[in-house]
Image (cartoon, rainbow, N blue to C red; front, top):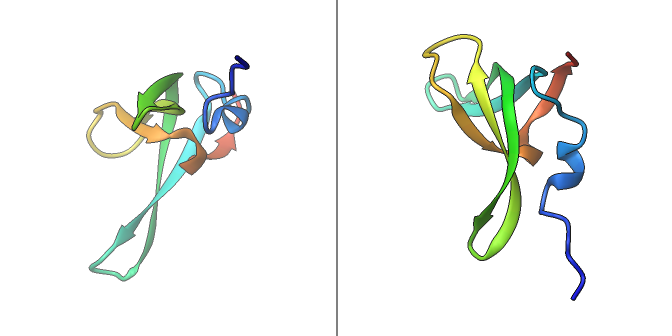
Length: 81
C-alpha cells in the first residue's frame, strides 16, 4: 500500500523552526480580519478524524506566551530564519 503525504505536508516544507508566520482571526467587534504573528516551534503530523494532517506549534509574538496549534495550511510565512 502506498503511503500518502499528510494533508498540508507539502506547505509544511516551506516552514522551519524559528520562522515567523502570520494567521488571521475574525474580529466580530470590528467586523474585520485581525492578523497575529508568531514563531514556529515545531511542525508534526497528527491524526484527526482518521486522517494524517500537518500541524504546526506556534509561540505568539504578542499576547500570552502560550504555545498554539494550527493546521499548517492556515499559516502564512512572513520571514525565514
